[in-house]
Amino acid sequence: MPDQLTPEHDAQQHADPVDTGVAGLEPRRPRRSHREGAGRWQAPVVVALFVAAGAGLGVLWEQLWSPTRGIVVRRQWFVVDDQLRYDLDGLRNQFSGTALFTTLGLGAGVVLGLICALFLARQELRTLAAVAVGSALGSVLMWQVGTRLGPADPEVLARDLPRGTVLPDNLELGSLGALLALPLGAVLAVGVVFFLLPARPGRG
Image 1 (cartoon, one colour):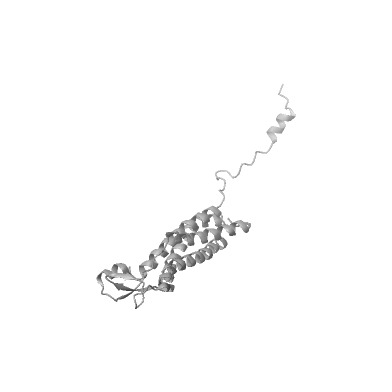
Image 2 (spheres, one colour):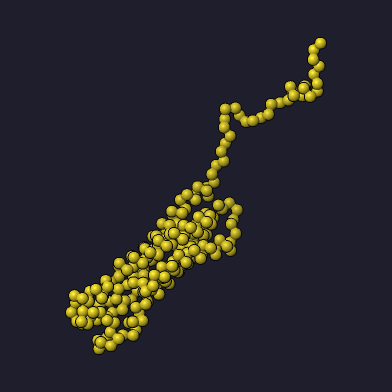
């Protein structure tokens, strides 16, 4: 006597096979978004932007700076006038190079930081790290370019020059802390933008 099919067994035989996809084809991998691909080149671009800006700022720093002039006396250089009296205005002006460096670095850092935060892909940590590294390199390059373009150290030149020779002061930083101006302005600008402006939909 043939086995009698139960309703459950009959339903299993006539049930449609589960669709697991087209045979022989692997499931499609999700495509990477444009923003995700842009993240690869964004950090090097940010660093290159600050390095190029640092070189340009170094040239601008040297062009805007007005050197103090002094006189060679006994093979030494002094900031004095023709009567060999200390030139107080000239002594005060010796700090103008550091003040100008700080002003230029801070202003340029804020502008470049805003550009990176507003016009590049929204990747907070990666952008912030790239800005920090790039601005530090740019600040050092600004310092080196400016000082190398400026006059030589008058105290060294005075050793081989006759009395009464007028020499300009060399361009230097009175404090290495001024190197923090550019990074501080840039990081501060990026942080403020990321904190105040929420991420837009569609931005990485």
